[in-house]
Image 1: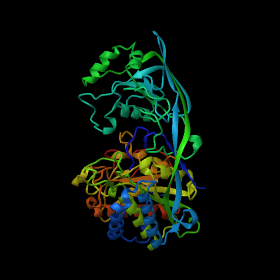
Image 2: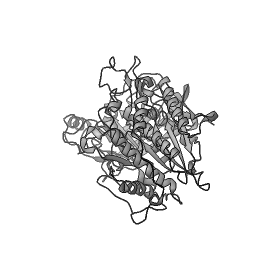
Image 3: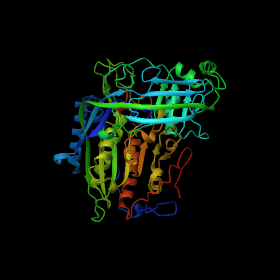
Image 4: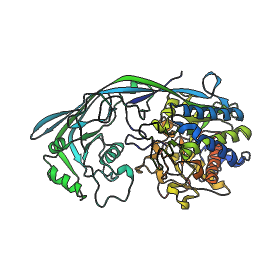
Length: 556
């Protein structure tokens, strides 16, 4: 799974991804079509164990996209698909779909003009303010009145839709009960407010004087780590709500007419004291974004794609997609470590990625084998091992922009990312799987998953905790299903939570809970078969997320 970032599923950087290629309602009252379907064979643990052991071995060098190790992993999965007999959907009769990443140099000449009863002042990029690198090439934002929101913890009872919010960093001594790391910084809270509907945010922070040309971080020059997952050059300048870092000079001006002076508010924040929230109706702010983007380099990688035809000629050109991401974060090569270091790098320089996402990769292979060797549903089944998920969902965005089958023909996407462990290694979660997003576009898809699980001889505990739209971790936007959901395709994301080995060089195969992994793979296989077997498609009712914390069961 990709690291959490303030801009939904990715960290905005200087790179741009470019693709190089050419129930009936199954509510609580309705029987499931799968009830009359052929009996499905059990998913085999031996195969999953073999595949996952190989994929997470040191020989795969951490499977970072654009590296030899990833190429070895893609070749290994391709060979398993050939043995299974799956139909290749890549170029030249292979299982490989080319994907490229284009890296850009960003030149920023943006300004912020603040008008108060005491006068007007303009600040430029790198001098008292810093705007993110990918805020759009040309954007003019104007605000009459702004909202000071204290520490900026999102409050569902308060709406800042279309407004400019201003906040301070730090943490209150008694923070809200949600202790998410995502809200531990002022920048993280500013990003959460923007995701909740604010038009822009300004957060207090240090702004070093840096050249206008360069990366999002201090210091000039292009940034090549994690790429932005866009797939057409003309979209590089798409406007996005900016999160602006500003120094004390700017905040002194913004809060000059506040009920409390800026210095008093800052000192209270430094002491962890509660902060008030209040409007600043007499402050007028103009944000003028002026960025240009120049190509620096291009790198190449591949998705792995395959298909198993359905049995019904009338529905064979419709698909249910099973997906995972094949890449991980790689290995230490003398520069900064690619992830957390739980063991010194000189002892273990490879991030093996057994759970993330060797577990999902192996589960999708097992489902493909079961469908190749067992009963076929009416619809065809599509299998995608996405590349560069860890670099901003690049592979899935490339697939969504240049699909191997028409997107309109994809009935649903079952995404599998990290299903081999318990959240925080809690033994109390031995039967738990988190399902995210299944109810957002299609109620039928949610109910298919729930009812399939209820029919199991040993049902799992399906937890919708992370499906809550207020979840600050925003897992819904952080894995490959989101690239399809953003195109209106029903998705269900299966996940068992993070742990201390997440993105660490200790995510190894010996810690995988294989019996649990197999049970979850079986659930996904049977739920996917159910959807692929239906005579009618899933209703796309777009009723939004309803299953959240404490929810269980079907939705009428």
